[in-house]
Length: 299
Image (cartoon, rainbow, N blue to C red; front, side):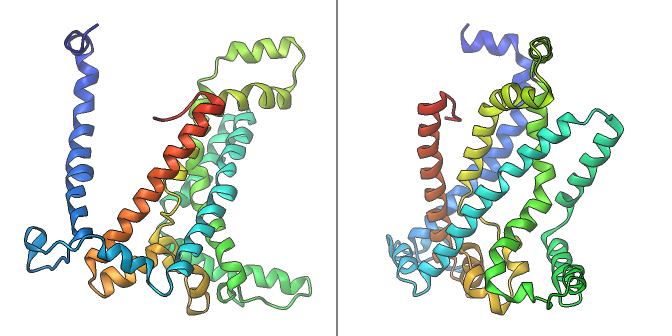
């Protein structure tokens, strides 16, 4: 069937796609023209067009920045911890929720897990500071057990773990939506056949649900890998204290300091381009591995 016949037959579907295409063109592709300022000495009054070209000057300046490796390492470590510790949580949560048979209880639990996603990082950070303060709930419990209070938010060894755990708290429930949708799409007759063969709930989960979820999980993993260096400015910045600056200063917070506070728009755009290139490279590499070992991928 040719494209013209296809459009004629499924015109309703094509019609529904049009707003999405317009959105991506206007808000995703047109702003990409601004990338050119990464290669120029951009000035607000001279504008993009009249600003002089400087080649890779801003990229070199970023790599020669005295704290580049500290900022880059912090970003890499937090990004790695987020993938390793955060990614499995929605999967486990979805599998457990799928086993709940009381629909009312299941919906209540889902709602409780979804709610933190709608909190801003400011609220999440505020709650975290309260919980982990010297007089907070955590230190009160430690005191009852005979331990000395710990200033979690001022100790560098806890900062990265706190960033990851607050990310899990906020987004784990929301991340179950796609996985639960994929589980609901599994043919029930497969489970019926497994029951006849004597497989219990746990074996059904291990031998049916998990293997059939692999393509969906691979796509989700690839999307997360694409945001490997994109830790999230608000998330980290709201949890940072002067004492944890050395382990929590990431590319995003560096961009804020240099780009917004010092007005170096070209330099920070160059950093954004660098992040995008690294993300794209990782996605392409893992997509290739995914195709090689599981015959699945997103490209």
